Image 1 (cartoon, chains in turn cyan, red):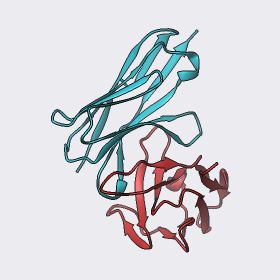
Image 2 (cartoon, rainbow over the protein chains, first blue to last red):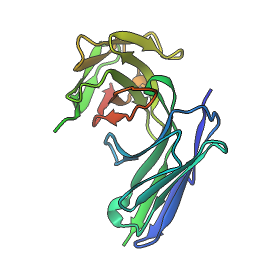
Image 3 (cartoon, helix red, strand yellow):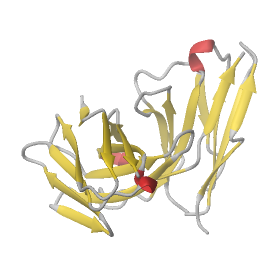
Amino acid sequence: KQEVTQIPAALSVPEGENLVLNCSFTDSAIYNLQWFRQDPGKGLTSLLLIQSSQREQTSGRLNASLDKSSGRSTLYIAASQPGDSATYLCAASTSYGKLTFGQGTILTVHP
Amino acid sequence: DAMVIQNPRYQVTQFGKPVTLSCSQTLNHNVMYWYQQKSSQAPKLLFHYYDKDFNNEADTPDNFQSRRPNTSFCFLDIRSPGLGDAAMYLCATSRVFQGIAEAFFGQGTRLTVV
């Protein structure tokens, strides 16, 4: 059974700092690794999808990497802003796009 | 804009009174999912539809059912809600092709059981 773990559980940084969120998964037989953002009381917004054959994906200030062999993914956020404050979830995808989520990292960026 | 829409955003129901949550999509995706997210926990898959084929997760309680009358709509029925069923219910869709599937989520329905 796939298990996904995210470290740290919470992170507070000053505006402008670069930061890294970590995600690990136990079963390397994944199809994709997807990163989401969740604002309080809201649904999930997809940030980046990394296919199992890929090593990384970039979108604006976000960069996600994937190392299937070690069961790890990282989300790098450059030049953080207060608007980046949210919960970040990673999810490993198996057959039929079913997702197993980590518990999330609660990010606070203070001015 | 193409999207996943959940109604209502907030639902209050009485203990034991059946309730239905709805989800619609304009993405024409072949797979639709329902996830349950309890407070401060990770979303947990309840079931999914691959086209018309229903697939239940092994640990989804019998209290939860789903219907997908057509490609665009999917419903979550909770037959006898208990206090432990209070949660955010998230609908998602994806187009599964050659194993690749990017999931798109709705805004969720927050269910309160009183």
